[in-house]
Image 1: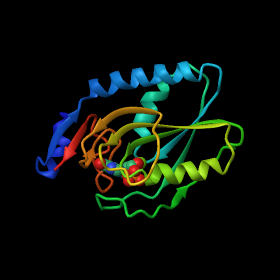
Image 2: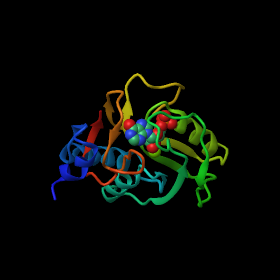
Image 3: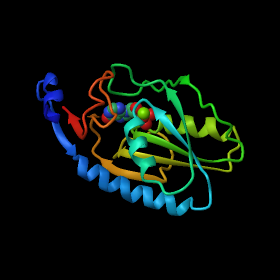
Image 4: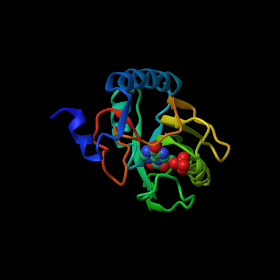
Length: 181
Ligand code: IMP
Ligand code: MG
C-alpha cells in the first residue's frame, strides 16, 4: 500500500511537507553533530512519548557514542489542535538524572510549553547538563522563552502529521510529514 493510502481517510486534506529522504538526511547530520559534541560522554536520551518514538529510533541508530535511553510521557492535545497549556506527567522518567548529561528528544515544538515544563522538571533533578533536540519547530508560535539546541527543521505554523506525529492518535505511522489542512 502506498503511503498516501493511509491518509486517504482524512479526505485528502493533507499536503506533503517533508519527504522520508529529507528527514533521514537531516537526522544523519544531527546524529553527527550530537556524536561530536558528546564524544566523551554517555548522555541519557529522554524521548518524549508518544510523538518522538520514530524520530528517536532513527536518531539513536546513527549515534556513534555510548548513550542510554529512557522515556517520559506527558499529556498531549487530545483531539484539539492547540495546547491547553496544562501538562500532566503520564509516565515518568525511570533513570537517575543527577550528574548526568541529559538530551531530551522531542518530535515538534509549538508553544514551547512542553519544553519549558520538561526543562523545569529535569533541572530539579540536578543533571550535569541539559539540552533539547527536536525534529521540528513551528515558526512564530512560541509563547515562552526556550532554546532548542539541535533542531531538524523550522516549519510553518500549521498542524502536521506523520513520522510519529498524530492527529487524535492516528496517522503516526505515515513515513513522511504532511500538513493537515
Ligand atoms: P507545545 O507544548 O505547544 O510546544 O507542544 C508540543 C507538543 O504538542 C509536541 O510534542 C506534540 O506532541 C504536540 N504537537 C504540537 N504541534 C503539533 C502538530 O502540528 N502535530 C502533532 N502534534 C503536535
Ligand atoms: Mg510531543
